[in-house]
Length: 131
Image 1 (cartoon, rainbow, N blue to C red):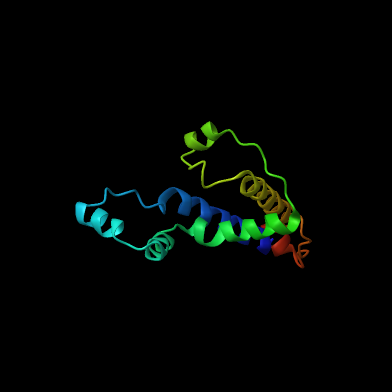
Image 2: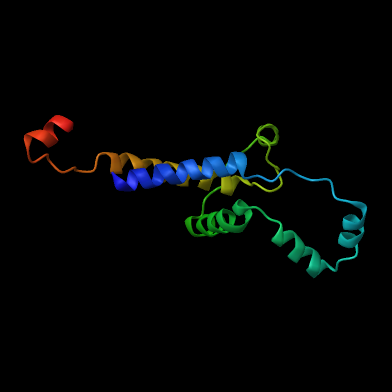
């Protein structure tokens, strides 16, 4: 039961982070564009990596490692669906999509199993009345 509550809290946190934690794109100023255009390729990659979101920093490397180890075939995704969902079709490939489905299914199975976890039996009449 505790494990199910933990995963439910984690799912709520990720959902709220996805909805409210996304920084809205800001139009860069002219000086920021000039500064970005004068960066070397290495500095530009470091600049981009510094401004990546939590998915690009944490979950994407995990899905790529699991996809390589499990030899997952890519799922077919219509780019129009990704655009309608507000995602960039160039950043999300079929392997990541299939692994996200796999991980969410595993998390759901763990929550369902934790829900059916054996619970303690009430010892006296007061606990029985409260249960």
